[in-house]
Amino acid sequence: MTGPTLVLVLAVGVLVATGVTLLLERSLTRILLGVILLGNGVNLLILLGGRSGAAPLVGTAPTDDMSDALPQAMVLTAVVITFGLTAFLLAVAYRSWYTSGDDEVQDDLEDRQTVRLAERNEVATADLGGDGPDGDPEQVDPEPARRRLRRNEES
Image (cartoon, rainbow, N blue to C red; front, side, top):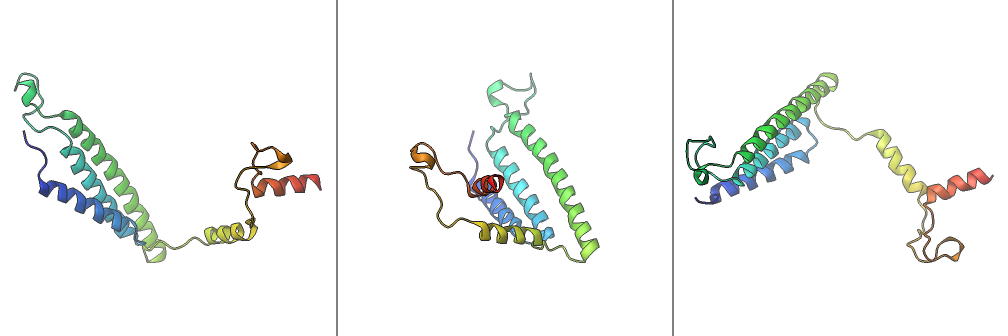
C-alpha cells in the first residue's frame, strides 16, 4: 500500500489555489468556474485520504486489502452538492446577463450608505475595558448605539 503520489498532491494544490483565485473575481462566470475547480480539488483531497485496494464488497477480498468506502461516499455527496451549487450560480449568472447584459457583480449602494453612516456615528474614544460605568472594574461601557438609545429614552 502506497501513499498519495506527488502529482496528485500537486493537482489538489493547483485546483484549490486556482478555484480560490477565481472565487475572488467579480465576474459570475469566473466565480462559477472557481466553485467547480475548488469542489474538484476538495473531492480529490478527500479521495487521497482513503485507503486504496479492492472493491469493498464482502467476500470478494480479504478485509485488509479492501479500499475505504467512506471517502468514496463523501465524494459522491460532495459531487451532488457541487452540482446543485453550480446550477444555482449558473441560473444567477444567466439572470444577471439577461437583465443587465453583464455578469459582473456590482457594489451595492445600500451597503456603501451603511458603511458611511457607521463611520459617521462611530465614537472616537471607545472603552477598552477596565473601569466602566459607576466605577465597577468588572463592568465595561455599553456600546455607542445602546448609549444613544438610552439618551433618547431619557429625553
